[in-house]
Length: 116
Length: 115
Image 1 (tube, each protein chain N blue to C red):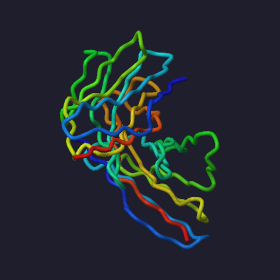
Image 2 (cartoon, chains in turn cyan, green):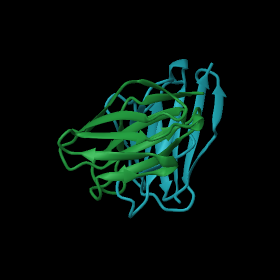
Image 3 (cartoon, chains in turn brown, green):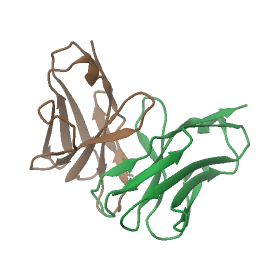
């Protein structure tokens, strides 16, 4: 099957610092990846679409300068939370679709960010 | 615009009882629909998907769902609940029915299974 891996699984940082989360498609190439955010006991909210070799597309209300997305290769997308604050604490999940798998997305394990 | 509504944020059943999780959708195009399961602090795992083939879809772990266009529904069922089924379940619709398209999720339903 298609495997998407995220790193780190857990990260704790101080307020004001930046944190980078990596999302890799391990056994397929992904020209597009998606970043979701999930608050406790809530649903997944689409933050942005990461496009290989071009700028990410952000959903309304998502600060592009706060959440920097880079998709430099067909297997790697990164999300950097810049100048993190406690309200950025959340569960971040990436996903990717594989060619031929119409509509289905494969999800990473998620990354739990806690900002102190 | 595509959206899904999950009725009931929390469903409790006894082990061995029928599981029914409800999902209604709204879509401007023939929808692709999905059910995912999430265990605590983990990503999402696909249970099953509807992509315009058979309306009754069978998935993993004994789950199945029926696409009913007239009712705009895609309810998830399992004849006999197991303790290991306790988790969060999300219904989702594709923004466009092709690879590389984002999914929009419902608010989720927490399934509790008691012995």
